[in-house]
Image (tube, rainbow, N blue to C red; front, side, top):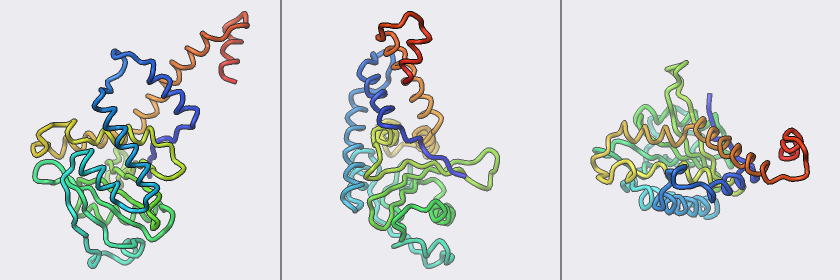
Length: 248
């Protein structure tokens, strides 16, 4: 079972943008600093889908999200054949975070030019044996399509974790993805980066990949924009006609 953050239509993103311009300080908790981080994250995600390499990914985690640098290939020699053969190269532990660097950020490059969900599950199930507290980042062989993958325990099936993904690619709208990934900034959890506990990091990652929160925010803001448009409509004598015209 997997969950994926909803892909908002262009019209939906415009609605969110309009609402963001009109929200007051009372209604939003996005500070100027957070907006700067989000803008930087979006620029790097755009580069990630164009440059076909992992340098933007390293800049994202090392410079903008304040994770520690690492550069440790993980050997597949002891892996079973099935997960090992779907990889183009050995996975890379390229960033860590928290006390004793116990939270890991792993990059995995697949042999496919797509991002097969079944292949991702095979690899994550293998890596979870040694990297239980981790974020898994997959790319296709061409390195222009990406999945940021978070795992969460399934309350209904403790033996099968839920996989939640944020998708990055040339055709993707990146505003929502940028906002969610900016939430992974360790400095927002605690400016003393070496003193952040792994449970605190896991909690923040869980919030960033919370599908229900993203969906709820979208529909709340859509409703506010809808009501404002409805109030601007003139020429109908009844509220029902206004409402039907707004929906059309």
